[in-house]
Length: 72
Image (cartoon, rainbow, N blue to C red; front, side, top):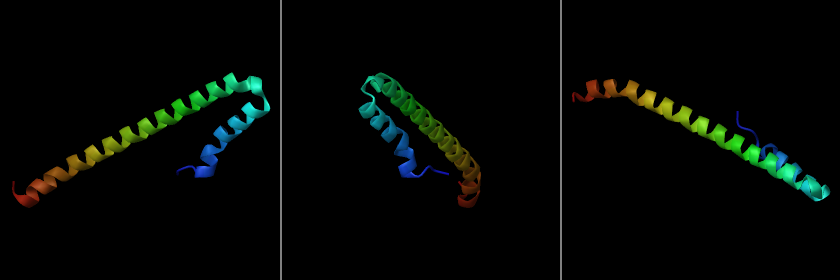
């Protein structure tokens, strides 16, 4: 189930507000933001790989049926 858009941006917003409230926490926030970005990228990469595998499996299952139906 996808995360709603406002909830997805809440950690970034809170991090930005923390930088404004506590100026010396900028490096910590930057590291946290970098880690969050890397985690999101990795999750997106995994989702794309799973979708690609599912598509390839679907094509492999459909190909014999298409060959039989068309007589090629």
